[in-house]
Image (cartoon, rainbow, N blue to C red; front, side, top):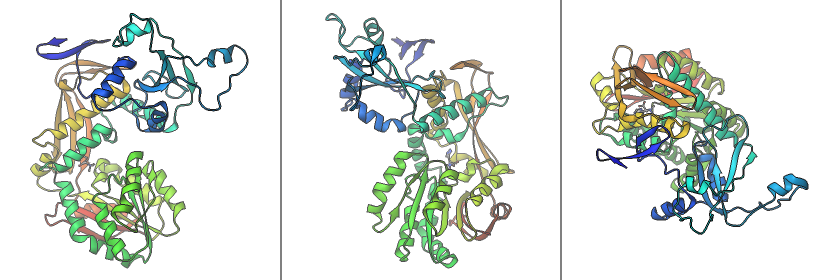
Length: 464
Ligand code: AVJ
């Protein structure tokens, strides 16, 4: 219904504004199929759903497939009542797959529920789920949840609850990057105020040859590993330069996103003929360890884009030591650092006029709504970026505009008016601080590659 010109819908929490970024939910099979058709698409088959399920935000809702409820190849009915119950595959039923936000993440998860799609002659095809429930036959099978998904929901829920129940509320910026977050970050990188991407791009465009020559001077043969490769659009400039120097090497991009890794393995060898690509899908340290078993050569590890900025400065040395532990003497690390500069320039980069960074922060609340069943109203929070030129710490907060309560599973989170959630740190460094960081974490400084404005550094270090 419309209230004050805004579309609202009735939920378990009463009337709520419809969030246009949320997936369509609470619909029958017919409505789901019609919606997909309206979008020029179709529902996935159960097989397609299963193949892609590792990339879904798991455990929030059930999803309609267009597959009939039929036994898998090789299915055998066991004798007795269990077989009689599980062995009935009825006509007129479609498969719904997924898991509920309230299914205990550690245990098995209900994976298949089957609703009768034809109930009675009088039942309109467009009837909602509640109507259908009166007639539906529902069946559940428990099978183990995919390990990646289980770990994801577990940690995400735990980290969010702990962070929001803490005295000083905080969320972990690594959770910014769901599909919507990835897209918003792409937009941030194109915002005029967000200088970081352009500066590092300039370094790679203007100095890739110098970087490649410096690498070759340090070791005659190596492979390249990249932490958080993303779409590798900037790195590919350096990869091309190293290829053109006649070096035979493998590129091991590491990324938490499996679809990104697939994309790189498919597209990079076409874009850079002769390049060998072996993607590693997982966490930095685990995959860095795995890369050691895949090559006897020295490794050049790239950690670009000022991702290090998201590590609080007092933890940066410990973080870099963990990387160092996975490397051998002579291996090389190139890290991107955003430099200290005029505070207004820094602050503007995290407070763009178009409001993309604001959306980027609010998107994490939306993600928590979708994936953990919370009811944040993003209109009641304000994006508040700060920069302290003394410490070089650029921190973003979301400030609660009023006293409010947010429900998340069993947890009720109270916000006082003006209470803030600490969302992200993007630490800025001086050239001298970068050199000192190298030494305290077990590296020798080789060289700093700086852009023409002196705003950004790609620092080359060698394992001592
Ligand atoms: C991806 C960590 C380099 O901190 O500048 C951009 C993320 N946050 N705008 C940064 C980010 C808000 C970005 N890094």
